[in-house]
Image (cartoon, rainbow, N blue to C red; front, side, top):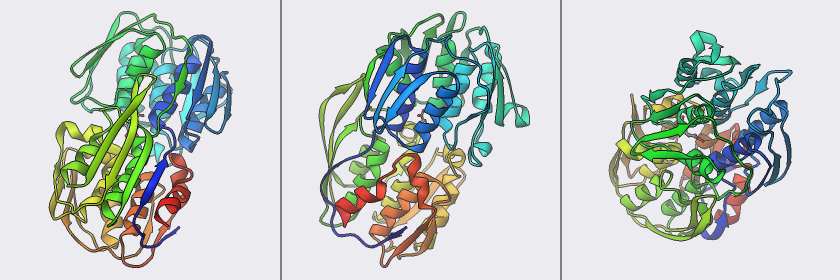
Length: 425
Ligand code: S3P
Protein backbone atom coordinates (compact mmCIF):
# COMPACT_ATOMS: atom_id res chain seq x y z
CA UNK A 1 0.00 0.00 0.00
CA UNK A 2 1.32 3.40 -0.97
CA UNK A 3 0.47 6.44 1.19
CA UNK A 4 1.06 10.00 0.00
CA UNK A 5 1.30 13.12 2.17
CA UNK A 6 -2.24 14.24 3.02
CA UNK A 7 -4.23 17.41 2.78
CA UNK A 8 -6.13 18.48 5.90
CA UNK A 9 -8.61 15.88 7.16
CA UNK A 10 -12.06 17.43 7.27
CA UNK A 11 -15.63 16.31 7.67
CA UNK A 12 -17.14 13.42 9.56
CA UNK A 13 -16.91 9.65 9.44
CA UNK A 14 -17.94 6.53 11.32
CA UNK A 15 -15.68 3.59 12.07
CA UNK A 16 -16.53 -0.14 12.20
CA UNK A 17 -17.90 -1.75 15.33
CA UNK A 18 -15.83 -2.29 18.45
CA UNK A 19 -13.77 -5.47 18.19
CA UNK A 20 -13.83 -6.33 21.90
CA UNK A 21 -17.60 -5.82 22.15
CA UNK A 22 -18.30 -7.73 18.91
CA UNK A 23 -16.44 -10.82 20.19
CA UNK A 24 -18.30 -10.71 23.50
CA UNK A 25 -21.71 -10.22 21.86
CA UNK A 26 -21.46 -13.41 19.76
CA UNK A 27 -19.86 -15.39 22.57
CA UNK A 28 -22.40 -14.46 25.24
CA UNK A 29 -25.17 -14.85 22.64
CA UNK A 30 -23.98 -18.41 21.98
CA UNK A 31 -23.99 -19.28 25.71
CA UNK A 32 -27.31 -17.57 26.39
CA UNK A 33 -30.80 -18.96 26.17
CA UNK A 34 -32.85 -17.47 23.35
CA UNK A 35 -31.88 -15.29 20.44
CA UNK A 36 -29.29 -12.50 20.34
CA UNK A 37 -29.56 -9.90 17.59
CA UNK A 38 -26.42 -7.87 16.99
CA UNK A 39 -26.12 -4.72 14.89
CA UNK A 40 -22.91 -2.80 14.24
CA UNK A 41 -20.91 -6.06 14.51
CA UNK A 42 -17.31 -5.80 13.25
CA UNK A 43 -16.99 -8.16 10.27
CA UNK A 44 -13.19 -8.17 10.68
CA UNK A 45 -11.12 -11.35 10.51
CA UNK A 46 -10.77 -11.67 14.31
CA UNK A 47 -14.49 -11.55 15.07
CA UNK A 48 -15.22 -13.88 12.14
CA UNK A 49 -12.80 -16.34 13.80
CA UNK A 50 -14.95 -16.22 16.94
CA UNK A 51 -18.06 -16.97 14.87
CA UNK A 52 -16.30 -19.85 13.05
CA UNK A 53 -15.19 -21.42 16.35
CA UNK A 54 -18.68 -21.12 17.85
CA UNK A 55 -20.21 -22.73 14.74
CA UNK A 56 -17.77 -25.64 15.15
CA UNK A 57 -19.11 -25.96 18.70
CA UNK A 58 -22.58 -26.41 17.26
CA UNK A 59 -24.00 -22.90 17.62
CA UNK A 60 -26.26 -21.62 14.82
CA UNK A 61 -25.17 -18.11 13.78
CA UNK A 62 -26.29 -16.04 10.79
CA UNK A 63 -24.01 -13.19 9.80
CA UNK A 64 -24.40 -10.70 6.99
CA UNK A 65 -22.05 -7.74 7.15
CA UNK A 66 -22.56 -6.02 10.47
CA UNK A 67 -25.80 -7.85 11.34
CA UNK A 68 -25.61 -11.09 13.27
CA UNK A 69 -28.25 -13.41 14.72
CA UNK A 70 -27.06 -15.92 17.30
CA UNK A 71 -29.39 -18.77 18.23
CA UNK A 72 -28.27 -19.29 21.82
CA UNK A 73 -27.34 -22.87 22.64
CA UNK A 74 -27.46 -22.34 26.40
CA UNK A 75 -24.29 -22.87 28.46
CA UNK A 76 -24.35 -26.67 28.13
CA UNK A 77 -25.75 -26.77 24.60
CA UNK A 78 -22.28 -26.67 23.02
CA UNK A 79 -21.09 -29.94 21.48
CA UNK A 80 -17.67 -31.53 21.18
CA UNK A 81 -16.04 -30.16 18.00
CA UNK A 82 -15.04 -32.66 15.31
CA UNK A 83 -11.93 -30.72 14.40
CA UNK A 84 -9.58 -28.14 15.90
CA UNK A 85 -10.89 -24.63 16.66
CA UNK A 86 -8.85 -22.13 14.65
CA UNK A 87 -8.74 -18.64 16.20
CA UNK A 88 -6.62 -17.16 13.38
CA UNK A 89 -4.83 -14.05 14.69
CA UNK A 90 -7.23 -13.41 17.57
CA UNK A 91 -5.96 -13.35 21.15
CA UNK A 92 -9.40 -12.40 22.46
CA UNK A 93 -10.97 -15.47 20.80
CA UNK A 94 -8.49 -17.97 22.18
CA UNK A 95 -8.36 -16.62 25.73
CA UNK A 96 -12.10 -16.08 26.20
CA UNK A 97 -12.94 -19.42 24.58
CA UNK A 98 -10.42 -21.18 26.84
CA UNK A 99 -12.46 -19.92 29.81
CA UNK A 100 -15.70 -21.24 28.31
CA UNK A 101 -14.25 -24.59 27.19
CA UNK A 102 -12.86 -25.16 30.67
CA UNK A 103 -16.49 -25.56 31.81
CA UNK A 104 -17.44 -28.03 29.06
CA UNK A 105 -17.41 -31.81 29.60
CA UNK A 106 -15.59 -32.58 26.32
CA UNK A 107 -12.27 -32.39 24.50
CA UNK A 108 -11.35 -29.44 22.31
CA UNK A 109 -8.16 -28.09 20.73
CA UNK A 110 -7.44 -24.40 20.11
CA UNK A 111 -4.92 -23.35 17.45
CA UNK A 112 -4.15 -20.10 15.65
CA UNK A 113 -1.70 -18.46 13.26
CA UNK A 114 2.07 -17.98 13.66
CA UNK A 115 1.55 -14.88 15.83
CA UNK A 116 -0.86 -16.66 18.18
CA UNK A 117 1.66 -19.51 18.48
CA UNK A 118 4.11 -17.06 20.10
CA UNK A 119 1.67 -15.40 22.54
CA UNK A 120 1.61 -16.33 26.23
CA UNK A 121 -1.31 -18.50 27.32
CA UNK A 122 -0.24 -19.65 30.78
CA UNK A 123 -1.82 -16.48 32.17
CA UNK A 124 -5.17 -18.15 31.44
CA UNK A 125 -4.31 -21.85 31.43
CA UNK A 126 -2.70 -21.77 34.92
CA UNK A 127 -5.71 -20.28 36.77
CA UNK A 128 -8.14 -22.44 34.74
CA UNK A 129 -6.13 -25.52 35.80
CA UNK A 130 -6.31 -24.28 39.38
CA UNK A 131 -10.11 -24.24 38.98
CA UNK A 132 -10.00 -27.91 37.94
CA UNK A 133 -9.87 -27.91 34.13
CA UNK A 134 -7.48 -30.23 32.27
CA UNK A 135 -5.50 -28.06 29.89
CA UNK A 136 -2.24 -28.69 28.13
CA UNK A 137 -0.16 -26.90 25.53
CA UNK A 138 3.46 -26.53 24.48
CA UNK A 139 5.84 -25.46 27.27
CA UNK A 140 3.45 -26.65 29.98
CA UNK A 141 0.39 -24.77 28.79
CA UNK A 142 2.17 -21.58 27.68
CA UNK A 143 1.72 -21.94 23.90
CA UNK A 144 -0.73 -23.32 21.34
CA UNK A 145 -2.03 -25.81 20.43
CA UNK A 146 -4.07 -25.87 23.64
CA UNK A 147 -5.93 -29.08 24.41
CA UNK A 148 -8.78 -28.66 26.86
CA UNK A 149 -10.96 -31.15 28.66
CA UNK A 150 -13.24 -29.22 30.95
CA UNK A 151 -15.77 -30.17 33.56
CA UNK A 152 -16.99 -29.12 36.98
CA UNK A 153 -14.85 -26.24 38.29
CA UNK A 154 -14.23 -24.72 41.71
CA UNK A 155 -14.14 -20.96 42.20
CA UNK A 156 -10.77 -19.24 42.75
CA UNK A 157 -9.51 -15.94 44.04
CA UNK A 158 -7.05 -14.98 41.36
CA UNK A 159 -4.62 -12.07 41.58
CA UNK A 160 -3.44 -11.40 38.04
CA UNK A 161 0.04 -9.94 37.64
CA UNK A 162 -1.09 -8.20 34.42
CA UNK A 163 -4.01 -5.86 33.74
CA UNK A 164 -5.57 -7.97 30.99
CA UNK A 165 -9.23 -7.99 30.05
CA UNK A 166 -8.69 -11.26 28.23
CA UNK A 167 -7.46 -12.99 31.39
CA UNK A 168 -10.16 -11.38 33.53
CA UNK A 169 -12.89 -12.31 31.04
CA UNK A 170 -11.74 -15.93 30.68
CA UNK A 171 -11.89 -16.39 34.45
CA UNK A 172 -15.22 -14.60 34.88
CA UNK A 173 -16.76 -16.80 32.17
CA UNK A 174 -15.40 -19.96 33.81
CA UNK A 175 -16.47 -18.57 37.20
CA UNK A 176 -20.08 -18.27 36.00
CA UNK A 177 -20.22 -22.09 36.05
CA UNK A 178 -17.84 -22.79 38.95
CA UNK A 179 -18.81 -23.92 42.42
CA UNK A 180 -18.58 -20.84 44.69
CA UNK A 181 -17.62 -17.22 44.08
CA UNK A 182 -14.72 -16.43 41.75
CA UNK A 183 -12.76 -13.20 42.26
CA UNK A 184 -10.28 -11.66 39.83
CA UNK A 185 -8.01 -8.83 40.96
CA UNK A 186 -5.81 -6.88 38.55
CA UNK A 187 -3.04 -4.34 39.18
CA UNK A 188 -5.03 -1.72 37.22
CA UNK A 189 -8.49 -1.80 35.79
CA UNK A 190 -8.61 -3.27 32.27
CA UNK A 191 -11.48 -2.77 29.82
CA UNK A 192 -14.75 -3.84 31.43
CA UNK A 193 -16.89 -4.80 28.42
CA UNK A 194 -17.38 -8.35 29.73
CA UNK A 195 -18.73 -7.08 33.06
CA UNK A 196 -21.11 -4.64 31.35
CA UNK A 197 -22.35 -7.19 28.85
CA UNK A 198 -22.76 -9.99 31.40
CA UNK A 199 -25.05 -7.67 33.36
CA UNK A 200 -27.01 -6.84 30.21
CA UNK A 201 -27.44 -10.62 29.61
CA UNK A 202 -28.85 -11.03 33.12
CA UNK A 203 -25.83 -12.13 35.17
CA UNK A 204 -24.94 -10.67 38.55
CA UNK A 205 -21.44 -9.60 39.45
CA UNK A 206 -19.84 -7.14 41.82
CA UNK A 207 -17.00 -4.73 41.19
CA UNK A 208 -14.89 -3.41 44.04
CA UNK A 209 -11.86 -1.38 42.97
CA UNK A 210 -9.84 -3.63 40.68
CA UNK A 211 -11.58 -6.83 41.90
CA UNK A 212 -14.54 -8.39 40.09
CA UNK A 213 -16.54 -11.20 41.69
CA UNK A 214 -19.00 -13.60 40.12
CA UNK A 215 -21.02 -16.46 41.59
CA UNK A 216 -21.26 -19.79 39.82
CA UNK A 217 -24.45 -21.32 38.43
CA UNK A 218 -25.77 -18.31 36.52
CA UNK A 219 -27.74 -18.31 33.27
CA UNK A 220 -27.57 -15.80 30.45
CA UNK A 221 -30.55 -14.59 28.43
CA UNK A 222 -30.21 -13.50 24.79
CA UNK A 223 -30.34 -9.76 24.09
CA UNK A 224 -30.20 -7.10 21.41
CA UNK A 225 -26.71 -5.62 21.17
CA UNK A 226 -25.95 -2.47 19.21
CA UNK A 227 -22.16 -2.35 18.99
CA UNK A 228 -20.65 1.17 19.09
CA UNK A 229 -17.79 2.25 16.80
CA UNK A 230 -14.35 1.09 17.93
CA UNK A 231 -12.40 3.89 19.62
CA UNK A 232 -9.23 1.93 18.83
CA UNK A 233 -10.06 2.24 15.12
CA UNK A 234 -11.17 5.87 15.51
CA UNK A 235 -7.78 6.58 17.13
CA UNK A 236 -5.97 6.42 13.76
CA UNK A 237 -8.21 9.17 12.41
CA UNK A 238 -8.15 11.26 15.59
CA UNK A 239 -4.35 11.19 15.64
CA UNK A 240 -4.18 11.94 11.90
CA UNK A 241 -6.39 15.01 12.46
CA UNK A 242 -4.21 16.14 15.36
CA UNK A 243 -1.12 15.81 13.15
CA UNK A 244 -2.12 17.29 9.79
CA UNK A 245 -2.34 21.12 9.83
CA UNK A 246 -5.78 22.53 9.06
CA UNK A 247 -7.60 19.34 10.06
CA UNK A 248 -11.01 19.40 11.74
CA UNK A 249 -12.54 15.93 11.91
CA UNK A 250 -15.49 14.31 13.68
CA UNK A 251 -15.80 10.57 14.34
CA UNK A 252 -19.44 9.73 15.07
CA UNK A 253 -20.99 6.94 17.10
CA UNK A 254 -17.85 5.80 18.85
CA UNK A 255 -17.71 3.90 22.15
CA UNK A 256 -16.67 6.12 25.07
CA UNK A 257 -16.22 3.53 27.82
CA UNK A 258 -13.80 5.20 30.29
CA UNK A 259 -11.62 2.06 30.36
CA UNK A 260 -10.90 2.73 26.66
CA UNK A 261 -10.61 6.53 26.35
CA UNK A 262 -6.97 7.00 27.36
CA UNK A 263 -6.27 8.15 23.78
CA UNK A 264 -8.49 11.21 24.34
CA UNK A 265 -6.59 12.07 27.54
CA UNK A 266 -3.29 11.85 25.66
CA UNK A 267 -4.48 13.94 22.72
CA UNK A 268 -5.59 16.63 25.17
CA UNK A 269 -2.40 16.39 27.26
CA UNK A 270 -0.37 16.89 24.07
CA UNK A 271 -2.34 20.00 23.09
CA UNK A 272 -4.79 18.83 20.41
CA UNK A 273 -8.27 20.38 20.52
CA UNK A 274 -10.63 17.54 21.49
CA UNK A 275 -14.40 17.84 21.96
CA UNK A 276 -16.52 14.93 23.14
CA UNK A 277 -20.30 14.86 22.86
CA UNK A 278 -21.93 11.89 24.57
CA UNK A 279 -25.08 11.03 22.64
CA UNK A 280 -26.41 7.94 24.40
CA UNK A 281 -25.83 4.43 25.66
CA UNK A 282 -25.92 1.03 23.98
CA UNK A 283 -25.84 -2.25 25.93
CA UNK A 284 -24.41 -0.48 28.97
CA UNK A 285 -21.70 1.29 26.94
CA UNK A 286 -21.57 5.11 26.56
CA UNK A 287 -21.49 6.29 22.92
CA UNK A 288 -20.84 9.67 21.31
CA UNK A 289 -19.04 11.85 18.78
CA UNK A 290 -15.42 13.00 19.03
CA UNK A 291 -14.09 16.07 17.23
CA UNK A 292 -10.35 16.73 16.90
CA UNK A 293 -8.67 19.80 15.44
CA UNK A 294 -5.00 20.22 14.69
CA UNK A 295 -2.93 22.31 17.13
CA UNK A 296 0.77 22.52 18.07
CA UNK A 297 1.72 19.40 20.04
CA UNK A 298 3.84 19.01 23.17
CA UNK A 299 5.49 15.87 24.60
CA UNK A 300 3.93 13.97 27.50
CA UNK A 301 4.56 11.03 29.86
CA UNK A 302 2.39 7.93 29.63
CA UNK A 303 2.45 5.13 32.22
CA UNK A 304 0.71 3.42 35.16
CA UNK A 305 -3.08 3.12 35.18
CA UNK A 306 -3.31 4.96 31.86
CA UNK A 307 -1.61 2.11 29.98
CA UNK A 308 -4.50 -0.41 29.93
CA UNK A 309 -6.81 2.45 28.87
CA UNK A 310 -4.85 2.96 25.64
CA UNK A 311 -2.76 -0.20 25.20
CA UNK A 312 -3.83 -0.79 21.58
CA UNK A 313 -3.34 2.89 20.66
CA UNK A 314 0.35 3.08 21.64
CA UNK A 315 1.68 2.45 18.10
CA UNK A 316 -0.23 5.44 16.72
CA UNK A 317 0.53 7.51 19.85
CA UNK A 318 4.22 6.93 19.03
CA UNK A 319 3.57 8.51 15.62
CA UNK A 320 1.89 11.48 17.34
CA UNK A 321 4.89 11.89 19.65
CA UNK A 322 7.31 12.24 16.70
CA UNK A 323 5.66 15.63 16.02
CA UNK A 324 5.45 16.85 19.62
CA UNK A 325 7.89 19.36 21.06
CA UNK A 326 10.08 17.59 23.64
CA UNK A 327 10.61 14.00 24.77
CA UNK A 328 7.63 11.67 25.14
CA UNK A 329 8.17 8.75 27.51
CA UNK A 330 5.96 5.64 27.41
CA UNK A 331 6.60 3.28 30.34
CA UNK A 332 4.89 0.33 32.12
CA UNK A 333 3.85 -0.97 28.69
CA UNK A 334 5.78 -4.28 28.64
CA UNK A 335 2.52 -5.97 27.52
CA UNK A 336 3.20 -4.44 24.09
CA UNK A 337 5.94 -7.05 23.68
CA UNK A 338 3.35 -9.88 23.61
CA UNK A 339 0.73 -8.42 21.28
CA UNK A 340 0.19 -9.49 17.63
CA UNK A 341 3.88 -8.54 17.24
CA UNK A 342 6.42 -7.23 19.74
CA UNK A 343 5.04 -3.72 19.25
CA UNK A 344 7.90 -2.01 21.10
CA UNK A 345 10.34 -3.51 18.59
CA UNK A 346 8.16 -3.15 15.47
CA UNK A 347 7.14 0.48 16.19
CA UNK A 348 10.74 1.52 16.90
CA UNK A 349 12.11 -0.29 13.82
CA UNK A 350 9.51 0.98 11.36
CA UNK A 351 9.33 4.61 12.54
CA UNK A 352 13.16 4.75 12.57
CA UNK A 353 13.06 3.93 8.84
CA UNK A 354 11.02 7.13 8.40
CA UNK A 355 13.55 9.24 10.32
CA UNK A 356 11.90 9.26 13.76
CA UNK A 357 14.16 9.61 16.79
CA UNK A 358 12.78 6.74 18.82
CA UNK A 359 14.33 4.36 21.34
CA UNK A 360 12.89 1.07 22.53
CA UNK A 361 13.13 0.38 26.27
CA UNK A 362 12.26 -2.80 28.16
CA UNK A 363 8.74 -1.52 28.94
CA UNK A 364 8.07 1.24 26.43
CA UNK A 365 9.40 3.86 24.07
CA UNK A 366 11.20 7.20 24.25
CA UNK A 367 10.43 9.55 21.37
CA UNK A 368 12.13 12.87 20.66
CA UNK A 369 10.25 15.51 18.71
CA UNK A 370 9.45 17.25 16.62
CA UNK A 371 11.25 15.31 13.88
CA UNK A 372 10.30 15.55 10.20
CA UNK A 373 9.41 12.12 8.79
CA UNK A 374 10.34 10.99 5.29
CA UNK A 375 8.64 8.38 3.15
CA UNK A 376 10.20 4.91 3.35
CA UNK A 377 9.54 1.26 2.54
CA UNK A 378 7.92 -0.07 5.70
CA UNK A 379 6.33 -3.31 6.82
CA UNK A 380 3.20 -3.98 8.89
CA UNK A 381 4.87 -7.22 10.08
CA UNK A 382 1.39 -8.71 9.63
CA UNK A 383 0.14 -6.61 12.57
CA UNK A 384 -2.99 -4.57 11.78
CA UNK A 385 -2.28 -1.75 14.23
CA UNK A 386 1.34 -1.38 13.10
CA UNK A 387 0.16 -1.11 9.49
CA UNK A 388 -2.44 1.56 10.28
CA UNK A 389 -0.03 3.54 12.48
CA UNK A 390 2.46 3.58 9.57
CA UNK A 391 -0.26 4.79 7.21
CA UNK A 392 -0.91 7.73 9.58
CA UNK A 393 2.85 8.44 9.67
CA UNK A 394 2.79 8.39 5.87
CA UNK A 395 0.23 11.22 5.82
CA UNK A 396 2.76 13.63 7.38
CA UNK A 397 5.91 12.27 5.70
CA UNK A 398 7.84 13.96 2.99
CA UNK A 399 7.30 11.71 -0.07
CA UNK A 400 5.48 8.41 -0.49
CA UNK A 401 5.47 5.65 2.12
CA UNK A 402 5.09 2.02 1.08
CA UNK A 403 3.64 -0.47 3.54
CA UNK A 404 4.21 -4.17 2.94
CA UNK A 405 1.54 -6.68 4.05
CA UNK A 406 -1.34 -4.15 4.20
CA UNK A 407 -3.83 -7.04 4.23
CA UNK A 408 -3.20 -7.27 8.01
CA UNK A 409 -5.65 -4.36 8.43
CA UNK A 410 -8.54 -6.76 7.74
CA UNK A 411 -8.16 -8.10 11.28
CA UNK A 412 -9.89 -5.07 12.82
CA UNK A 413 -10.60 -2.55 10.04
CA UNK A 414 -11.26 -4.11 6.61
CA UNK A 415 -12.00 -0.81 4.80
CA UNK A 416 -9.44 1.36 6.60
CA UNK A 417 -7.82 2.69 3.41
CA UNK A 418 -11.17 3.55 1.77
CA UNK A 419 -12.27 5.55 4.81
CA UNK A 420 -8.87 7.24 5.06
CA UNK A 421 -8.97 8.17 1.38
CA UNK A 422 -12.44 9.66 1.87
CA UNK A 423 -11.26 12.15 4.51
CA UNK A 424 -7.59 12.66 3.59
CA UNK A 425 -7.55 12.43 -0.21
C1 S3P B 1 -8.78 -7.14 24.54
C2 S3P B 1 -7.92 -6.92 25.58
C3 S3P B 1 -6.57 -6.39 25.42
C4 S3P B 1 -6.40 -5.71 24.05
C5 S3P B 1 -6.94 -6.56 22.93
C6 S3P B 1 -8.43 -6.80 23.15
C7 S3P B 1 -10.11 -7.71 24.81
O1 S3P B 1 -5.62 -7.44 25.51
O2 S3P B 1 -5.04 -5.42 23.82
O3 S3P B 1 -6.76 -5.92 21.69
O4 S3P B 1 -10.99 -7.69 23.92
O5 S3P B 1 -10.32 -8.20 25.93
P1 S3P B 1 -5.08 -7.98 26.94
O6 S3P B 1 -6.21 -8.62 27.67
O7 S3P B 1 -4.01 -8.98 26.58
O8 S3P B 1 -4.54 -6.78 27.64
